[in-house]
Length: 85
Image 1 (cartoon, rainbow, N blue to C red):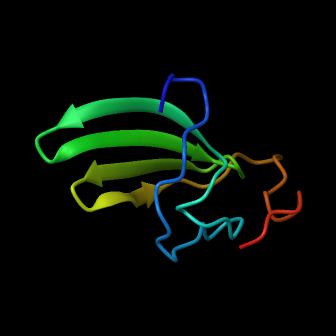
Image 2 (cartoon, one colour; image 1 turned 60 degrees about the vertical axis):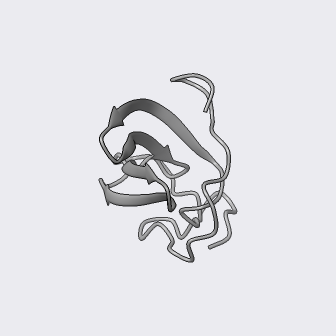
């Protein structure tokens, strides 16, 4: 995860998908919004391909989404744009 405005790599296959667009949580694309160190590892704010803001915890077991918001109104979902869930 190189910059606060670029995309980031795969976080691992979790089998969990975004409830709004069906895109796998462990797959690209998602945009890195910010990263913060924590006692357990780091907290990473990302944006899913559908625009849903997500909070990911990255620790010794990998990265996983702990909470997510709804996509912004008026933005087509990744599923509508051809994403596979």
